[in-house]
Image: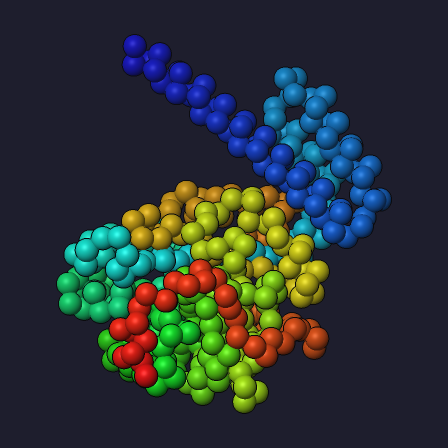
Length: 364
């Protein structure tokens, strides 16, 4: 029976390998279709037809791996264009400090998530992770000192990126200007002392889950040395733009309101790539992945998928990245006519503050 099971396992693994090549070819063809439409390259049609016919006619008669590789050879001129694009995959874990569970559960979520990230870094040397909110690092200091030391080591390696400019994902409408300044000051000072990073090293304000953004935010951020802004709610329909405050101060803003911040790495992450290129002229795209709260952040499946897709010859480059790497790349290529928003970024969840008169009173 043992020999039989080994043989069956061999058959199963063989089929899994075949299925992997089939999925690869299917996704490459779908990408080619979108690329043809975006580039208006009707002359690529015959190449695509030849590749499809080769695979269709050879299925069942020749190994699928061989068929797919030959089809990719036919599509190689299109593959060169596909590799002009890069998806920067930024691993993240959105952790609500206090939502539908008690504080001890938040502590457990931080511990479980960060431990998972640390283990994945052992297994995947190219894996990088970006984490916001100084409060998550305070949890390490107060409750999980051994894990804190591991995180410090990852920060020193350059694989754990700190994206916390504020203590938590802070409200940007109800909070006073003084409160926002204190958020920045206390966060920068705390993280510099705790992690040994320069006090001005965090250049991004990471706010995917807040419900609106006052017009004065770019002014406050710019004066604190923060140049970039990531958010998901209350945008103007622009993916990448300069957000300008009343005094003319600007931050480079990325609105991720369509795909959001709880994604997983899959071929679908290219869905908005050409819309983004059309709007900005850029071929570098930011994709944030990792399941927040009790989801544990990035998964092994994400990292294996990134490795697999990056090896596909008729597909964009897939890069495990940080926000610093992404923004540094695009800032060198920004068009002169990148849109400027000289306004607040509102509204979403209208009326969500109306019952909180005690909070309003305390801010006056």
